[in-house]
Amino acid sequence: MPENHSHKGHRQRLREKYMLNGLDSFKLHEALELYLFYAIPYKDTNELAHRLIDRFGSLAAVFDAPPSALKEFGLSDNTVALIKLLPDMSRLYQIDRSESKSNHLDVFAMSRYFEPYFFGMNEEAFRLVLLDRKCKVLFSGVISRGSINATIVPIRKIVELALYYNASFAAIAHNHPNGVARPSELDIVTTKKVFMALRIVGVKLVDHVIVANDDSLSLAMSGIGIFGEDVVGNYGI
Image (cartoon, rainbow, N blue to C red; front, side):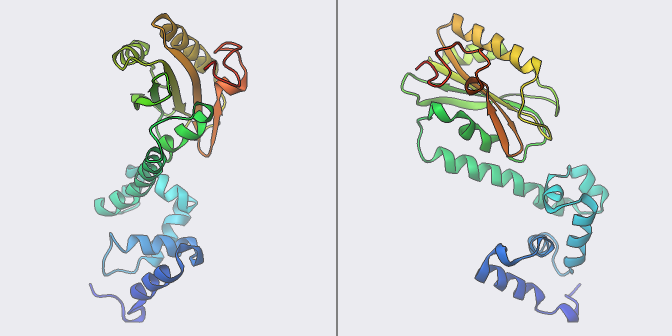
């Protein structure tokens, strides 16, 4: 259906406004309206943008909403896919930008390294990074996924990967979606088990990072004693 006469040229004007000034000059509903242009042609997306933000509570909540909730709202599969693509693409952008700088990991900044990998994730995931003696990244990947409040940590798989890559150091991380970056008793127990298992094969676990939204916590730097006194402050390297 053609664009309503009263809105004729509105899309082009909004695009030109963005190209000239970026999104900083946009209200939240205007930014969402512009974004929805690319999934919903020939229709006014302004009202829809307002309704989505009102329904889910904020612009961020719209993009964080599960696909099922967006479909229940009446959105097409194409529109849902576009909405869910944004946080996922943002995460890939941050990861690629971080990894392209260097293939050597600053072991004093594990939290900063791990944070982009969990951006926008609504399920709990467990990530492992393996390093050689010079802190060059040998392996980095998700080795377990779970519910939003629990994940099974495959300790045997961690050890096997460490041996396969002939790693000298390892670090682990997981996220607390919709939670806080504070270790639970289970997190501490798990860290101890991984530390001991890797020590048997000559690999030093240097950190366990917990990521929650825009916050993160390094267990090694928190001084809770899991990694040994020589680790805190210098990772024992």
